[in-house]
Image (cartoon, rainbow, N blue to C red; front, side, top):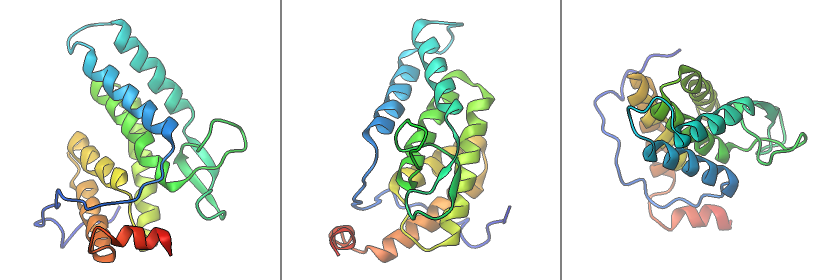
Length: 185
């Protein structure tokens, strides 16, 4: 893995600007469901119905992580990814990977099971490879994932990558109207 050099002293601007996001409602609701269940469970309980629900949902989410056709460009595959819809022929799209991984990260934070963190790390590393390979706009949820994963793993590379992608996005879309210009062209 590459080491970061020039970004270590820069701070991530909390104002990410306005982004037009087209994400799968199913994945967002699933991620919110996992997060809500994780918050509602008591921290020290050995096993409770909400914690059991988080475990079952996270295990299912982890089992669906795999290699799928790239629906964003139609060329190649996404690894450590989740499908857009749950069916055998559905491809994976770039904009749904962050929310999917955030759901697993919430499960890891609630339950402490390393297998969930490993799934998140795999997805984040693949995300970094994709964003480093092009200069496209990073999605806000992907930057959030990288920052939260940096905190969970104490690995500054993820936060530094989020900074880089944030700077790239801010440079491309300098006003709140710019993302709509991108979408409407």
